[in-house]
Length: 409
Image (tube, rainbow, N blue to C red; front, side):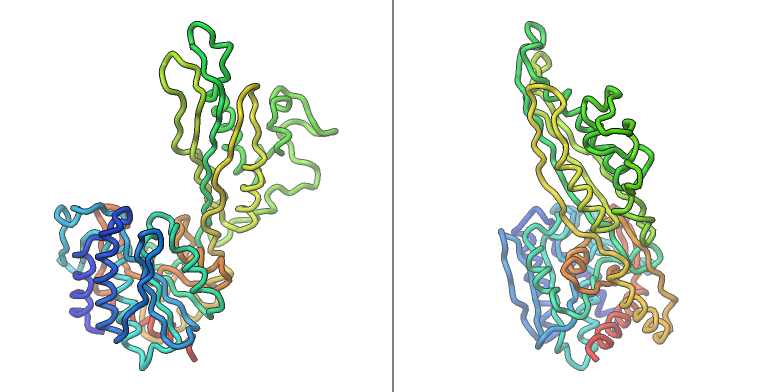
């Protein structure tokens, strides 16, 4: 692998800013990526525009292997002027260099090292950083029936591959009440803000129910009667699990070191003026789950929430976003990667589970064995310290070449 040429290609991609929210910038970036792919692979991609977002797909023969990446970044236009491309002391810097433009360069050079890319599909999306709303179906379609998906997201610390990822769900709870003058006749209102406070407390208990913690409760037990100390089920005390009912069965143990399910209220708002009983309140809820069973259980519990205060109404919006990338999906591919790395004389590979999601969650959810974190070695994703260790790029590229070759045999 010619590192100088790889760095020239990386500079070209970094120099074209591609903030996810700016569809025109993403379209310009797609052209640059397409031209670079044409130079390395000798073929033009299919350009797919969905909801204004530009994605690229190369298909060689009948694909058995899928390479997945994205060309959008979290960095607004103008960041390049503040943090320009540079290479010094073996470190490359610039917006998007680590997440994940170096991964795209490595993918193109890895395929170029094969006698033929026949049997490979390369998908480069333009909206991964905002949850892949327009590309999810495209990713799942491209992954179905493939023998393997290799995701060119940046590595974990120390170059570790990502063998598991938590799944994500996103909800919004919307409470509607009745406005009234807060000083003259507050009793005529139905306070959506107070109701939202009840719901936030209920939401924060959902993770315990899924994880089997000591405060696990059923929906019935979090009702107003239960919170006043009245047991609604024979032989039960508020806050106790039913005998023989393993609330934690949905997410047993701690698979892949991902940690437990988390359910976190985040952005909230209520009311309009200081002297008005709020008629509307809302809160966003971020959910991270280690298993599909946990994700389904959280969804069930979220949808079982009900209002506490008379005159208020509750709406639960949203649901599961990305399914988990469970360790079973990556285990076979990771073992192959370890053998290939040893044969190349690379340092022993390690694998870790991470809480953040990627498009690898979608490929795994579509039933395709998936190995993630095959992109750049470095750090600082989404931070001013974003960087790539350039000396690692040829080895990572050779590893990907070996993986693709192994799956095409």
